[in-house]
Length: 233
Image 1 (cartoon, rainbow, N blue to C red):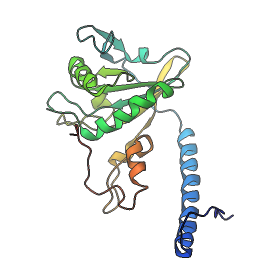
Image 2: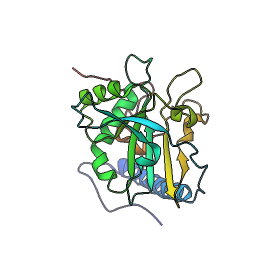
Image 3: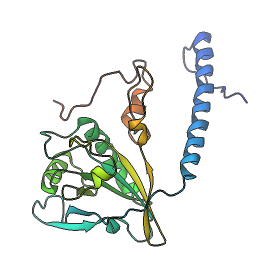
């Protein structure tokens, strides 16, 4: 079935329309493929049970409260009635002078989406820096909608492949599910570890990072070496 439309744009040529119709077919095919992949993801069996109820540090008050800290266990990240948890590992280790700019740009976007997302799912961000350092950076960015955790005192980042043996940080996203009182792993963005095709950047979080999808609409594309800044003049 053809995906061609009757829509025409001011001043377009027949050459443009032919190329655009061919692209439209490819876009429709991509949409179908994305749906099929999402279905395959939903059909995954549950992974291994989380054997440790990790203890994280979390700010106990408003983000402007720089002193009040509490311990929160992994099981406590699940609110009543919401049995899925998305936990993103923010590349901001204790030895890093500054956080990862790519993570920062993604979390800027996720901060805006969080009030919508948390209507359906538990959402948290963990970094291995001390919680005071994480929250200080969050205040500077205006991240008031993200649940921020420090994994500095536990092995979560290492266990779930967000930290290499040498201590370097990796931008992993993991999904966990609570069923019948047990918490089990469900999904990880393992594409980070798969060898990319020649000339391809090993991106693995495109579906939740609006910036890349926006750049894909441009004639110049994403670029091969562009990275966001932590600050703009």
